[in-house]
Image (cartoon, rainbow over all chains, first blue to last red; front, top):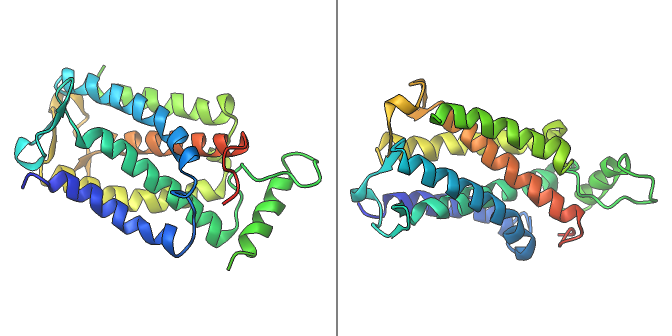
Length: 130
Length: 102
């Protein structure tokens, strides 16, 4: 089945979509921040992938991939994997923050007293959401 | 370098990125480890499909040969480095003021 790999990626996106729709993680909504975060990861891991493929450390089943190959004989599914899985990870982190109210480190410092306010701010915003 | 060696290098480099370069310190946060535990479960399911169905196959000489849910144990390090790097950038950009608020 040519679309087996793509189906796996589609499953990942479908499984995490409720986080954006119902938990309002607003990760896709913050698409500029999302793209800026994904860019270095896609670059680093695609480079790694190209190295591994060139050294025959792993290979992909032509019968289960679309057959669309990028330069370096990299299936198009691979860079998509480096977009999809990190996106799912961000959705998960934001969902944890939403539900538990735990800080992740980007909270606005209220009162300007520095890092220690992150915890209190995170809890306050998280607790007030639902 | 073998896949095993590259994974160890990636893990160390990503930890340095998180702790000292970006100073996001996700490795010290409960929210990160909770999110990672959830991601890890789904990673083992999806990666189990990718490797179990042999959509991806590995050269045995590039890996240790230890497998978890069909996948080489190295994939766990690969996935951890990918998730940690992603989340570190996400927090870093938020801290830098790029769409910080939901």
